[in-house]
Length: 310
Image 1 (cartoon, rainbow, N blue to C red):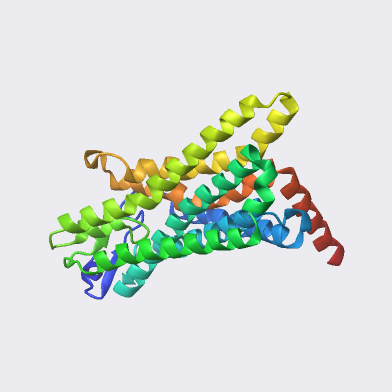
Image 2 (cartoon, rainbow, N blue to C red):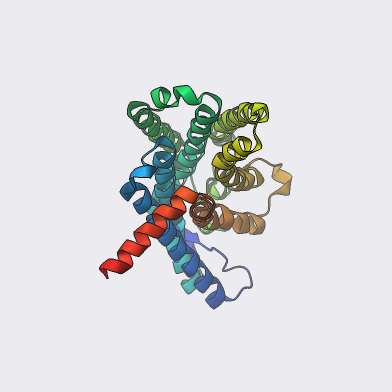
């Protein structure tokens, strides 16, 4: 274990300190990663090539798929390498770059989900103003704003952690450079850093969640007022996929970050983080693909065209 004292960076242990079947875990993760790319690329292609999907809802859904692919790619390749080697080194630059993009994409997904909730609110509650409120300019401004806010939030996190001093023992008990894991490895005082990170870091999670909550309370009240059951069912079905994705995302985020420090367990955090960073990006694409008739038809048409040209 002499190599763990390298001064050029950190050592990502992933699950090397736990007993598990390397071959099974590697194969499972590789299949999930492949499915993530395949399902999300198919979804993005369907949105781009199908004229009926050129609407604000699917524009944001396409952006969500791009984020999911990127989010998974930030951690999975390095994790697969960790499993094969029983732990792998990562340079300081590589570690902080990984953390930067991880926070960037996680924040962006949170903001995107709130924007998609607003889109559903306008569509259900004020449908007559939908076209004017959710025009191309508004969609572009919303999307750019999500990326800019995410970049700023991630930059703050990365800068604060890069200013800390780290001990000689740089074993990261995780499969990516996580904010919590790096703070625990610091030899300097982390009180101010933790205060700044958890105060500033909670804003892009809590505020979008509250906006989503408000949007769906208004949506629920509007759906209840609809007289015909078929119209109520149609209105609810247009939101059901988004609600499932929100539950997956915020459920795991709350479990990892919003809980007492006395309940901290690196083992359980790693397992839940796998659901958050690896499984959820795959499930998002399948949820929208299987539960949305317009997307299913567009995908079927795209696949049939692919077979006809082969």
